[in-house]
Length: 127
Image (tube, rainbow, N blue to C red; front, top):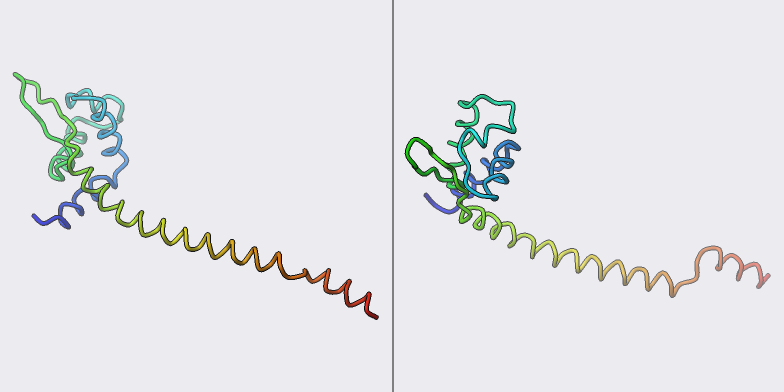
């Protein structure tokens, strides 16, 4: 699977607030399906569907300990998504910096020119 497809899977998985909450919980450490299901008003099969999406996207993995299948966060895919976003963050920060410079230049020009009321007052004084 190429990187673009992996990113698509990652962002599709992250689009759901329940899946993001599951990832937030797993960032604290491993958890069983029952532990992950507890804060949600979902059936175990419903939570399992979310876990399958996260697993398919490579965001989590499930191990085996006796009858338990603890889930754990796999941060590599999140890092790939963050790196991709960071490339665009750099572009936008550069654009915002240029915009900021332009706005400061406009303010300087405006401060150097008399305001309309000052022009009117000067015009009245000449008459």
